[in-house]
Amino acid sequence: MRANFNRLIHSHPLVLIDFHAEWCEPCKLQSPIVKEVAEKARGKAYVIKIDVDGNRLVSGRYQIASVPTLILFKNGEIVWRQSGIASKKELLQLIEQHAE
Image (cartoon, rainbow, N blue to C red; front, side, top):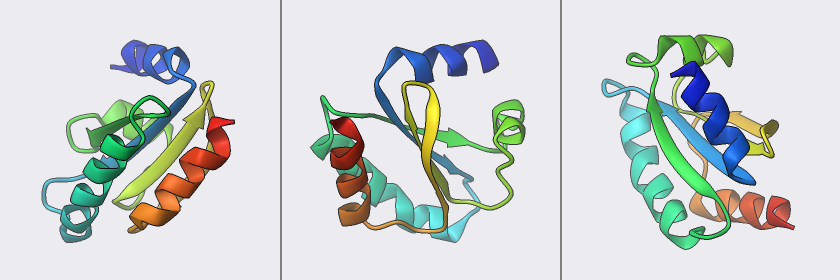
């Protein structure tokens, strides 16, 4: 997954990743927000979800200690990171800000 992950974050100008877990209640609240953001940001940002329990190497590499954690990569570099629930408005504003 590590090689695929590196290729992924470098092959799209903007990548928003939702690190989540199936057992996490806040993640269940964040999930539909991320889905809506993915639809609205199509063409501007690539949005994916990564289960921390199934992808421990990537989760460890980015020191994901709590979920949900959202990370926005621009050209492979972290430009924003937040643990906890983020609003649709906040995420769309971030994508607009970094899409320039």
